[in-house]
Length: 243
Length: 172
Image 1 (cartoon, each protein chain N blue to C red):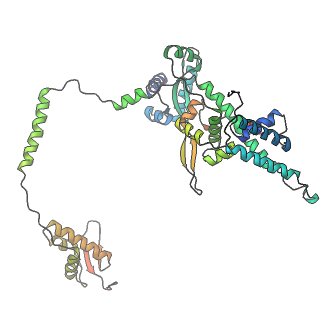
Image 2: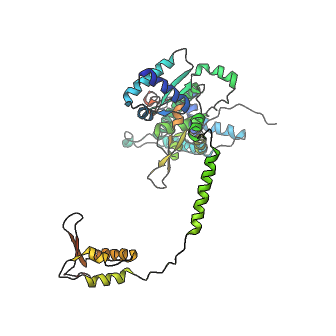
């Protein structure tokens, strides 16, 4: 028949170790490793016999304790005695760090439970205010009719639109570049406006402009403008790099 | 706008908001510099501390919020029977305090100090909106960094992280 026993629950090996040290009233800086290791393993065996699953960390700590114990059993060389590290140091540092946070968590835990009885409101009301919009109190029926008629009219207009054929444009920037390059001479400045207004279709003007930009980028022509909004003049570059 | 009216308006806003309202927003709203407004709010906080008041104003990260005073909880409890906020386990508190003091920090760091794995504690704390991911550490594996939330400050009655109990008082 299983017997239920109330056991102190330990959060981890450090917690257990800390408990053992406190119970034995030992100085944490001078832990009698042999004694503590014995008690620690005793406790693990007790838990095992009670069918309590042990976290692997508990076993790691048991192994660590045994390592420290065996290191301390080894005789020291006389000349090493002074600067040799105490094998317990690492464990002590860990224990102290754990102790610090265990105490802090107690303080924080008190703060939390003291504050449990202070309630605050949810944001429901403010959220509701932000989300809501008010309908006008009265909407005259005439307005609805008018709006509907407007929409209806607009859709009528749409039906009357004539459809035009869209022609495919055969213009390419490359062709334009060659064409413009012929117009601009290397001797005289040519007006930008002259080149652009030479064409009448919008598309052709755009393509000419792009062609000009391409020519400028490739340093095939140079551009000058005396002042803001003044006339833009174009000329072929005398030296033609990349050609 | 005289001070009385500002206080009255502040009272309305804090009541409606429920959640904490940043000083910055209030300063813009009333067109009063933060220092002056803070002084006005502090005055209000003192007034609310009086025995004739059941509400109080708390400060969290330079934001303000109405809460009830804990000593009147029994009356609220009798009438509304609110579901009590769950307590926190020792393991959760340990994990939370390590994150609170070491933030931003990684799970590996928490595990190292506690000597056990803290995964389930971390998830529970995230679930309770007490901690959150705040970024990733620029180290192999880019581990997630955790920090505390505003809710943490509120539930623990802290004005800001600098209001945490002094770590040096505990240190040996």
